[in-house]
Image 1 (cartoon, rainbow, N blue to C red):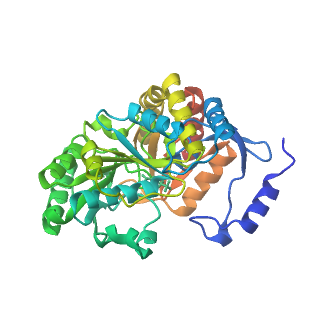
Image 2: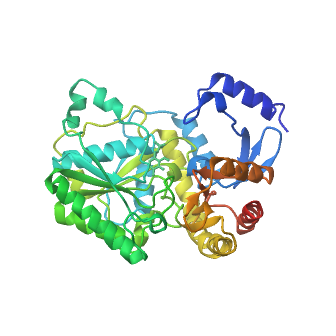
Length: 431
Ligand code: PLP
């Protein structure tokens, strides 16, 4: 056990660190010192099964030896190198990503994370089409940036002469249908009709891109109904719109696939990624670019890039993580956990308990929607969710809470036994 205690670390941390997404006067963070596999350990030596993967990114789990070794080797060789310089590790990372991506993509643009991946994908789409608007969903999260390039004054801001419109639509979400739908097929057809009407009302020739998470993540883990993503692709083809699929959270094993949208037989023009690409051991994100869009920038400058884009330590971590995932069959494992362990256990809970309104997901990407009135589908209170959180922590499980939902998003490497233990704790608490 370390000489440090939870109390000491939380005290020092909250005294000096301004926390993101938090009221600074109400901080009550977990203090974590180390981890292994799907287990994290606090400073008092207590072990927890991690149902969060931090912010849904530690897909390979903690202290994976192959990822650590890859970073250490690159550190010894060259710890940093600018994006304009050629470096073997960056090229290897791009190749590893293309190897697991759907066929036909040839280029990867690197960023430091998911928000900047989406920012740059949007700029590519705007420049490629010469149009300005981006359609995305109300229930979505694509990152927390945006003002910086609009505030920039010199030539680098110029693509933002297009950066005006953002239009939001409702996506399919049968449990809380905006379309009075009663079946998944109805929900899908009506959501596509709604999208078509918005495109027509906005003017198809003003719309550069439709930006969608393959499976909305923090907004609720709504796996799209069969045909929805293909329907969006058809609308994009009909109207010359770029389809950007955000795989930042859903990619690299989370949904039991390398890229969740491939299960829906749909092709994106741009795929954004981050998180699971290297499990966040060193920050990395990027855009996988279709040959058509890459060709747009053969003879003109793409005005985007970041000082640390494609950082060699991050790229080394990506090479290590992707190789480890391939060698260890992590994607198949995640898919099987969803089908054989998590899905069946949650279906039982949903049948047994009124408080469980709906459970949904795939792979190691699941949501339990908790309601105080099963008929009206009224979300439970924040106080209820806080009590769920406390009870799970007491039982050695770290939960991911999003409004009235408990998300089960453990590292993809969690074992079936560990997952059963965590599910037992969830069931006990909800009962
Ligand atoms: N896109 C999705 C789907 C995400 O879930 C997130 C983060 O949670 C982002 C983009 C933003 O990524 P980052 O926080 O690395 O900027």
